[in-house]
Image 1: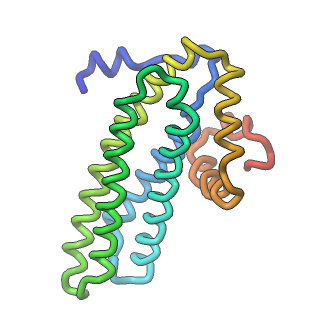
Image 2: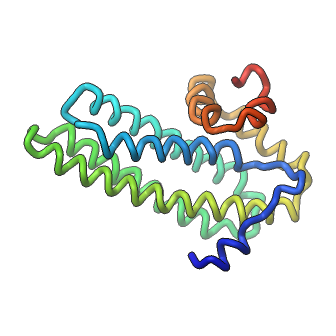
Length: 194
């Protein structure tokens, strides 16, 4: 991505409803934290095994987020093809990451560091791709929604997404989102969500 594209994509909210902001902040923070953990954990230890379990949970939430976007947001976009192709690639990556996790779990102790390095690099690559994907959603897709929908309509989409999430998954999403928000942003959340 060149600097011109970066600058051209930066857009202010101008008071509009930010459909992607909070969940993407949560995913960015969780992915960055996980990348650090994958880089500094010894996967043979109990703590390393917990990191692998936490990675599985993060990937499950990322997959659920993709499903929400495809189910509730993409039908309102004229051309969601690129985003859906990126989502397909993410799903393929989730499976490759799961295979790498299993490789660590099934490897003899002496081979675990090599398997862990593969997972670390592969997850880092996924994070890099997902950061660009979320950037495109926030700077290209969202302005298209703003141009064709009112904030009330966008809020209705968000409400439908929220209603589709089980209480257990909502708690997991909020565990990602709340620590990533500024104090002012946290204050906008309904008390039941904090």
